[in-house]
Length: 291
Image (cartoon, rainbow, N blue to C red; front, side, top):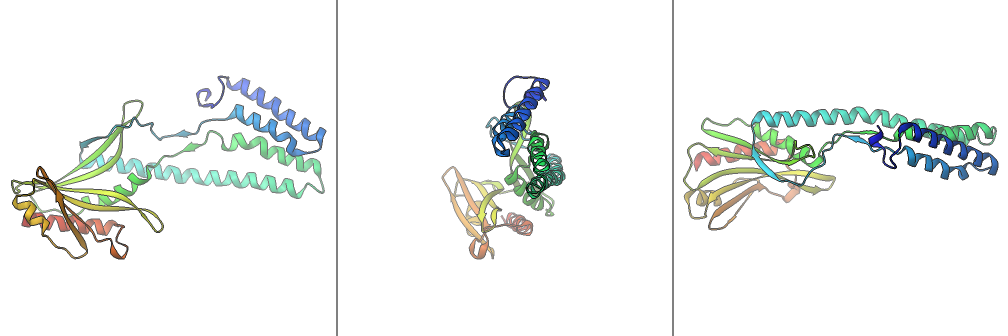
């Protein structure tokens, strides 16, 4: 608890004594000067001594970007951890709302009683102000990586599409590292490869970006066919492929060719839902069967 205080290197007992003195000073100023607002500086000073950092599961990243192949089981474990964090956040939301409601109720009662019973009004006001650190300081914050969580559900849908024998789907996670050296997953890709493939074909990589939609950020999945150069049979076949509702964009250079296959963005297609991602995976599996 001592280590979580924001200001000064003091023990809990010393802080409580100082806060108690400041709260008492606030009451004296309010009574002596006839204004509850004139005691607020002393109250805020007490808050300063009682200020706590929130407890959170958000890691402090080091800025690393290391892509590693992982198993389906690792992806399932990451998804389970995110689901647990979401449940924790939801469970914490209710008490936070109740605390805010209780504070607002005390302030409203103080206001309504100010004409008939000034002393009761002052007591209720001070009760609300003095209780702020206990109610809101040092709260627990459940961290859910917003963009990664949106992408993950799309990847899980794509991974669930049945594939014929002879196809390998490999997930890749991009890891950062926290201060304790533990892996922190931050992004995800999929690599789809047929076991028997043209010599120039590397595979089809599924990626996701975050687009800004009319109602906020939305995930957008697309496929990138990777080839060795742009002169081989796989590149020639994929750059001419056609599929209703999809755009095909050849690119790359002499060393690595790329063919981006993405959902058409006209008519609001900048957002891919789970079914769109399943359809994209199915499309690329069929295209690879013909390569």
